[in-house]
Length: 115
Length: 121
Image (cartoon, rainbow over all chains, first blue to last red; front, side, top):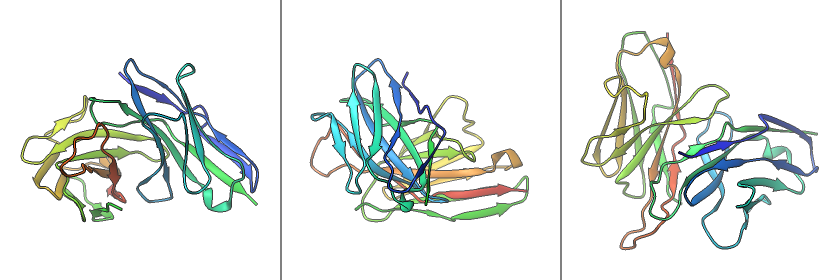
């Protein structure tokens, strides 16, 4: 069985400061990894994903995440945050090639940007 | 991009009544849809996998007679909460699996609906 742990339930940072949201997973099979963002009272939007290839993946709005197989981590980073980045962020995992498409989500991290 | 809608966005009902929530893929066909439940300030928990033309597959601990799922067409799945009680109050989110036509992919992206907030009085 797969599981995802997001170590921080809340992360407050100042605007233009860097941020890292931590995510660790456990799985006995190869996995795909995802970060989703959820704004208040809305569904989830895919931020970025790792399927294969380069371990560093980037989103169009400046976020990046690095897949570290030895540490079973997929931490999300942004060098300079904006007020608009305030949201709930979920890390998720699904089975890799040939596996089921079901997503297992972490507990979520609430990112709050202070001016 | 692929769009998934849910209706209604918010519903309030009395205890003992049934509520139907619709999930539609607007610009693609989805043979597989998923239903999730999210409690306040918590993560999403997968309830069931909905497959067009066949019975849904429920996750362990989810009552299939309580949460009825019907995937009658390639663009519509419905979740009916039967005999709703206050503990069923939650945010229900669906997703639809997008498969590129004519291609076999190892990865198929899920597109999420905006969610339905159910409040049972």
